[in-house]
Image (tube, rainbow, N blue to C red):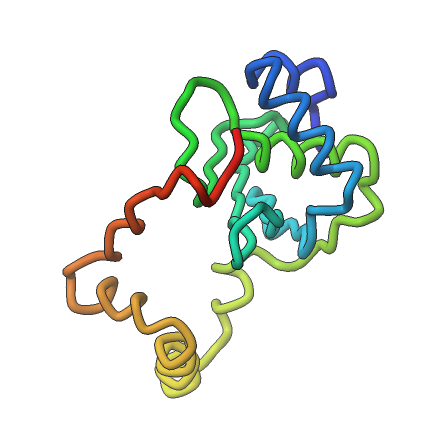
Length: 150
């Protein structure tokens, strides 16, 4: 199913991000590792209060198509949180919970059920309402360098 290796991960990150990602992996910072269709997601604990949300999209051959993280990293290559998620996959694939892709999970739901579900999601995460009214999601809070070590 997956077609990437630790060497591939190493080539997609700086040596510092890779080393820090290894440290995060070893410390058990990766949680809620889930595969839904071609989307591999997880929460990765950092130095902030909330864990970062990490998403890796896979192509149809199981290779890494793209990756994103809610952290403010912008120094080239993948951040340590993405590296930690990918290393968890390579080194401990049994930790991956496989679920139906979002479209497949929603496909047979009735309209009223979908409205109730969306309402509950917005009650839980009010910022999602911007996706309904067309205003989009708010920009991430400005990064405070004291919150995270690189």
